[in-house]
Length: 93
Image (cartoon, rainbow, N blue to C red; front, top):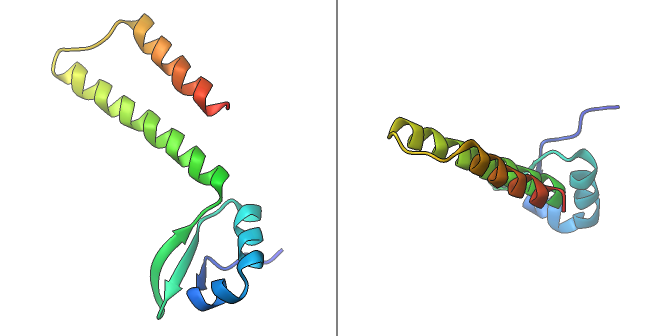
């Protein structure tokens, strides 16, 4: 199967919205929307967006924990595991 384009012009998006949407949902890969030949936006499926947001939230918490450890502050292992369980349970919804 040929590799799909990674970009589509805004005019093509306007003319072929349904087909572009199917392509984005099917590939689960971001699609760059161009305007006048330049990247203007990125279109991703809701599934991909939600996964990326969960990953971003987890990385944010890990970075915060790293800063707290460096500063000599922190939480007990039980609290950390409880917070991790909350994040994971939200991602399963």
